[in-house]
Amino acid sequence: MIRFRDGSTRAKLTIAFGILLTMAILLIGMVANQIGSIRDAVDLNQQSARIIRLSHVAEKGVIRANSQMRGVLLTGNFDYLDTYYDGRAQFADSMASLAALVDLREQRALVKQAVAADADWSRRYSDPLLAMARRPGGRAQATAILVAAGAKARITYINRMVASLREIEERRITTREDELHETMSHALFALGVGGVALLAMAVAMGWLLTRSIATPLARLSGIVDRLAGRDFTATVPVDKRRRRDEIGRIARSLEVFRVAGIENERLEAEAQRLIEARASDAEEAARRVRVDAERDRATIHIIGAGLAAIARGDLTFRLPGGLSGDAAVLKQDYDAALAQLGGLLGRVWTMVGTVDRDTRSIVVAGEQLTQRTVEQSGAIAIVGDRMTQVATLIDRNTAGVRRVAEVAHSTGEAAEQSRRTVAEAVRAMARIDESSEQIGAIAGLVRSIAEQTHLLALNAQMEAARAGAAGNGFAVVAKEVSQLAARLRTASHDIAQSLASARACAIEGVDLVGTASGKLGLILRDVKEMSTLVTDLAGAAERQAREVQDVDVRMRDIARVTERNAMAAGEAGETLARLLTGADALARSLTQFRIPDATDAPDATALPAAA
Image 1 (cartoon, rainbow, N blue to C red):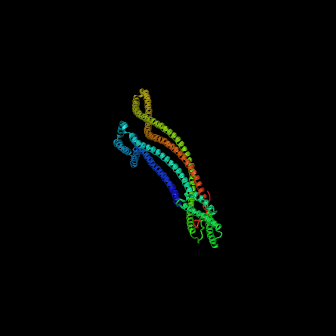
Image 2 (cartoon, helix red, strand yellow):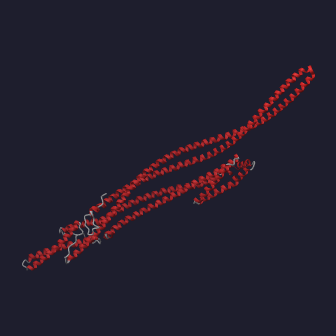
């Protein structure tokens, strides 16, 4: 405390503002470090989100390959192979990207295991079975092998590996979010504590500067006024004279003025006593005494004028030359003290202007920060409302997706039932075709019998004609039989044509029903795939709804923090306004002084406007 008081005014101001600037830099550094940690956590979360997205793509790729392989085996349609190879490529590309992104040993092991399991599944089941299905009659055998393999030929274990990889990243995201929240809390705490400490230090520095500079100057100004009024009973405090700064030098000079004034009064009184005691002394001695008294009185008058100029704040006044003895020494001390005091006030004025400009800049920046914080708070509130609406919409979409999944499942069951019905129709058409063939054979037999009967009737008519009148009755019967055989032949021919037409229609119906059966198989496969995709979509929609709800909660937390920041910025602005008012008052006080250097002299017209 003593060292600070005895230091120069420039050193005091440098120390005060250096401490404040150091604390501000430390506070900014702490907050910047916390912001860097938050930015790193956000970057890692974005990488984890990409890993999760790639795991979903890999799952869909292996599911597509498996479903298309089974579609080829069930329907014999090799057009599915394009989608099968696309699914394999999708899985391979996704796993390659995951291998480059993951950074944990456990995750790398899961990626390698999933790739190896996919290669094993392809080597043991998909590639051999597809090659077998290409051979004549091999599709049924390949289907039987696939059914016999059961769970071994499924890709569930591959999806479990990919899901385990995704679960690890989801846990890491949760951990980082907790750390991010803790980091934000630490940053806000550091900002609050640092701001309070900075404000407390600013108040303390202001109090120290007031106590060490402003208050002593005010007291010395009162002493100067009393000395100018020839009141030499005014004493300069000893503690002020012992100071080693500009205030101490001024105090010691004032003490010299006071002692000289007292000595002059003593000399005047002694001279008066000598005049009264030695009234009869020579005129020459009286004249010398009067001359000395007049010289001392003139010296005191000159010094009083200088002190009066100091009291008025005019630091440009200098004692005239021509003084000798102690008066000359007093003049030198007076001029040196005024020069140092003028330089000090000039530097104080410059520093006050700097403080005023910087404080106004900080006030403007604080007002802009407060306005932007309020605007940000409103924008965050709007975003929070929008996130709530999005969460509600996602809930509705999730319910709709579940309903679509149920409808897809029902459609799949209906398509399966239709496929079985069509298969029964195919078998019924086959039986109809067999019956048509049998009826055609019977019709041919009837036509052959009719022709033979017709020949027999002709032979009977010829025999009846040979018999003459005795064969007339037999001829009539033979004629009727011949006509009946002709009608039977015509009827059998019509039946054969009708059966041929019916059989052709039956064959066409069998072909159409077979085609319908194949189409229904394709529809059934697509419906099953759609059901699987819709189920995955429903799960993704539910996860998205939970994520949106988490984002909504965090947006509300950010809104509360922003409101607190706005309040803190407003309080800081009020504090800076008070500081600006104090600087303005100090500047107006400095305008009472005139300084020898015109460039440093305070000017009331240049005084900054009060806040």
